[in-house]
Image 1 (tube, helix red, strand yellow):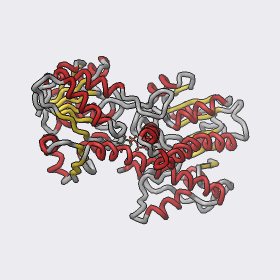
Image 2 (tube, helix red, strand yellow):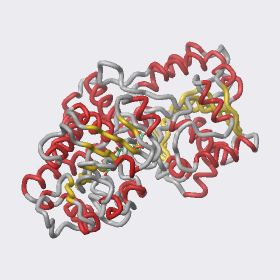
Image 3 (tube, protein in one colour):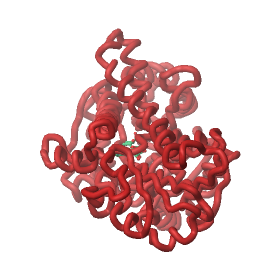
Image 4 (cartoon, protein in one colour):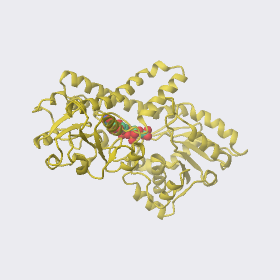
Length: 461
Ligand code: UGA
């Protein structure tokens, strides 16, 4: 099929490459010329494991091309996937829909007869119904253009895998034809994976996306709230998560306590959901999400407090090494990153901060230019009074704490992700603190279990 993917960010670029890989002829479109040039040369404009190979293979095969022209997209495609961003509106909790609207305005006048526009961006419920009206107004007379909503559930860092092996495909449609076209688009994926197919209304499809993210955010904030209780009561939140997580009704994934969730999705999606519920007159139904947000933002403050305590009650004159800038490992995305937020707060309180990240340094520098960024862990840790482990990259979990102990001034570490092997670090002479593991405060820290193999179960898929 001839497919366009409009918006080539973390979602669109991966979707375009994967659609080409399963055999479609794909045109990726973006307003960012530099990004389009990189993609057309087979170079991913951001860090996403596996994407480079998929791009090169399909660009070389001639199945995947790129353009900056919406008019070209309208003339090319039978199916148009809209994958542009819906960030938080400045000064409001609501989603900013200007990019989605701009795509519809640019695309609709050139749509071919029978074209199907498929929204993938995360939008407030009711958006698709509004866009259908707009397409009807703008599309040329005689064009029976349709709109469907097909939310995407991929995780950054696993985006290629998640696109090709989705847990489920949800489509919001207003006709059987649209459902049939989408089944055809995804046929190779459905056949390989026996993927559940959920065909529903536009509103349910839109809601499926935001409520999934709201649930995930709630799960993380739940365990982080338990971490606070553990700190106060002398409990251990990692063991607690294991203990409740073995119950299949609860499940261990997304129960990793630490500095909380960040990124370009969870934080802004729960806020937009709250805002939309208010518009719909069901504000109270989602009032718990305000708590979820507050618990999450408190994690960052809590990390700074514990760090200050560990640093001897003040950051003045202290060298602090920060390991991690991305909002999660295997990503260079620093949007609303807890790690960077904590690093900046510690610096503002007088510390000399050196930040390391395996992939996100350039993006981090653009967002927080006053922090000092270094290319290797050793450099970050040189003469450090305290190490803050804030993004659980594998590289950090595999560090040799005895080597690092010889580099720092004081071997003290705050594991903000509960992902380091505490016993190994302690055996190498480190004082280790973590969030929600109160009984580790003593020097011996007896009884503190090692994290489960591989650290974050939730992110291992
Ligand atoms: C999230 C959802 O997981 C995807 O299903 C969804 O498609 C995507 O948003 C989206 O809306 O586009 P993503 O933002 O890539 O995916 O990241 P997650 O893996 O969900 O992690 C989000 C944040 O939660 C990260 O900062 C992570 O460190 C944190 N987290 C995750 C925890 O603090 N604890 C956990 O147990 C799990």
